[in-house]
Length: 450
Ligand code: NAD
Image (tube, rainbow, N blue to C red; front, side, top):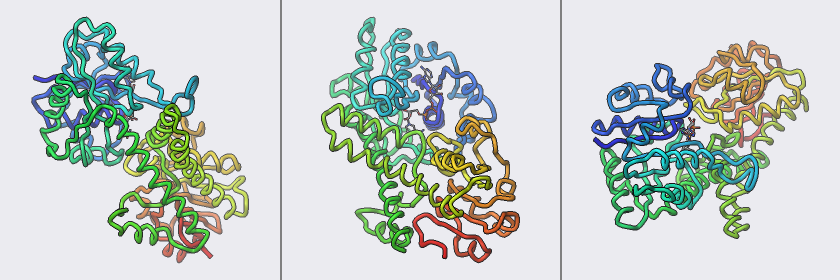
């Protein structure tokens, strides 16, 4: 029986390994983590992350061929294939601070693999890492290899939170990069055989190591750039009377552009886009390409601009001050169908409003009070959208949860201060209908309310 061990039981490690386990009953998969609370949660009925469909997949194979453990060294030593899916945040101090990837967790995982291994290993980069990381890992592993053969593969993960299980069951592509040596090719083949249990062969792409590592950064940079492009257009739409939904539809009909990922919003968030672009910027700078670095920096600048533009719109619409006014925030996660608040635009929007002394009240169906406390050092969290909006002067919709389309806005209007404002940062509500109720409505990138 092939044994897989994944180091890191997070948003990537947990779901990806659960899907491998469910699709490959003859493979034993153990997900290990240094965080005991996280592992305890994976072994409980309340999984540590919310993802549609995840509970069912985990229940189908946990205890059969899928296991979660804190005994990191034991399971690493026993594995044939080791996925490394630890966090790779942006460095906060020292060389490259604010841009470069912090590979501390990666390096300590690699050193631990080198310490405990007694048999040949395929080590798979699942985390998003700078191009050429595999070279550094090879140095760590082979420096004192005790005759063990290590093959490093890059197999970046392209899942999107909120649709992780769907994405893993039917990936657009699986990318595997390896060394172009006989051993490297053999390792690529071994990993291909795992995915071949459910991914059609034409969707499994093999490349050299550096192409695979760079492709992940490039994919996130392109996706984020698309959001910043449409958000830049949304500002111009508001200035000119054009409607960003109409513009997006019109340009998306061009088959060279395509319709996906063209929704204007309050900005992108999540743990990856900004971090990966900063990482790309740093790599460009280190390789003597400042013009290329500046190009990608602009994607983040527009994202920051979009968030501050939204806050300014709220404050200026409310007679230039929100001081002492209750502002209800509907949606705090960085997108719908996830409880993840890492780098969510809601943090910056709330901070902007709090900076103007607003009383902020938050509701999100999947975010907990603890997360709000951690992200904003405040605890005004409501368990219901009607409670959050009661007595409010304004409502800001910051996450595109479907349930926000279905709320009883007449009831919300009746319980709000007047004039009652709605600032829709995701274009989820029917602005015309709400205007009919009496709301003053701002929809991002749309002609403004009279
Ligand atoms: P995460 O923070 O949710 O999980 C990482 C886990 O690794 C944590 O539970 C941490 O305790 C554990 N860990 C750290 N060092 C360890 C060690 N030495 N031994 C054992 N466990 C250790 O992170 P994530 O969101 O799952 O992201 C993981 C990687 O995947 C990152 O590089 C990220 O950029 C990339 N990625 C994330 C997504 C996403 O949507 N979240 C998508 C694609 C790629």
